[in-house]
Image (cartoon, rainbow, N blue to C red; front, side):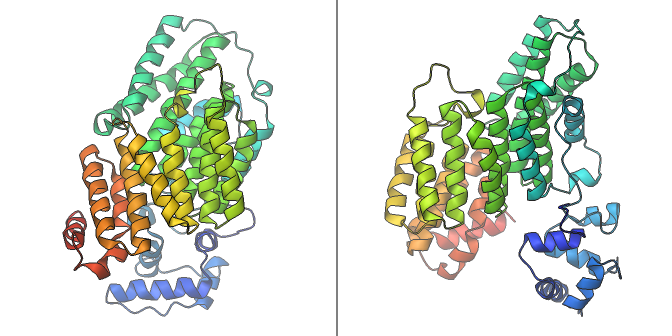
Length: 439
């Protein structure tokens, strides 16, 4: 929990920009939806936040959980106020926390880690620590020898293939990725190996953790995704993989942007970008920075970030792009630039860029295509082009269902309130019916 926020309820409320009175209003609305009456006002919430009173377990706490979108299982299992977000801090960077961060992420039993995400302030602090701490200052003297090169090579080969298949074959790789990471974690914790093999093992652990984090993120399990990105950052840092660490920080920034914390995303990227070496990696980070700045309505800084992304992408470099960003190309630059311009109100040019980006995408990147189509549908809705928006959103939904991409389905479902008043328009009613049937 951020130091300046003394109670998790205050943290959860402040993160959403709600006053105590606004939270009280939302609790009363939640009660009304259940056919109940609540007298919760700002004064009562003040007592809860200062510890002078505790909300009732049978009525008030379930209503608070509903308002914040927290599974009721957390309420009954953890107790007040531990089921509220903002309770945990990331482990500090250091070689002794690389394996513990992996074990923490892999925990599957029902505990507070299943529900509670890191605060944006804590993540920004972790990003700053990563930026100013050289990996060489943290490494152990590796004299342990006995895990052989053949085993590490096999682990790397299998891990690389699982990461490659993680998006398109999610339903088959989810468990395999976790089991492979469990094996790698055991080798790191219990094996004996040379320093070069240690670096390879931690790099592999970081890559596997990053892939699992994206799967959890796509499933809207944001706390779990944060845990695996946190573990990935620890292991990339221990391995001395600066660009991979910067990429993982940019993933955390992307998650904050998705959770409407664009300011936190900008802060994290501000630490990551200056220390990113490969131009393709730098292009991706600048592009994500532009997305966050566009969400904040900062036109000039956003355009400068887009220019920096384009320049970096065109910069020749003797080494190939790292695997985690090797997919980054002109298609991504065009489509995400279009999304930025749409957020800034430049919709005609935005549509041109999004069309260009979608046309350039290779057929293998189905999930990205579904995301870009939803961007387009949202922009068409803002323009009042309802029928085209419905047709585009339907294409995205079909693709998302085919590849089992729940985050993309959620993106399409988020368009439902804007589509609902236009149910008479061509294709809208059919799309709304499908979304309702999907639950």
